[in-house]
Length: 162
Image 1: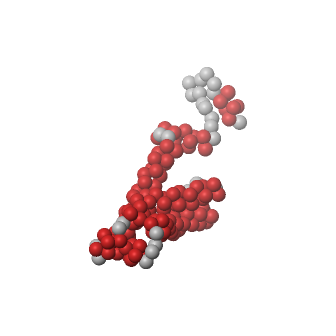
Image 2: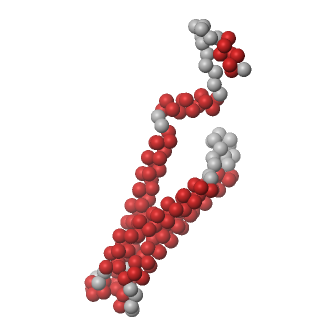
């Protein structure tokens, strides 16, 4: 039908170019800019902010428990054990927060929009796995510097700060 209408008005003062509603909306969105690139930049900024917040939280946690690290080292915990403990705490904190976020996103997608005003959202398994990988990466990266600092801490310095 669209080709017939376009042929009827070809070479006239009111020439038409018929398209679907989806094509019209996509063309309108492209006039604004590359929405995909804008979304990726926005999500990268959010991920970076989350990384900074998690890193700050872990640095504060290690700073507040310096004497505990000294006691652990006094009891014979190795530097590697201290490193693993701090990294594990960081990963667990990120897993709890990120897991709740992924769960909320999954529930929203499964439930759908009750008003019918939003487009249909899809959350493929690939994206859930990617999200879980990013959660683990943020946990490790955020805890790495505080864990190295705790690992290199001398027993005397740790106990003196009490």
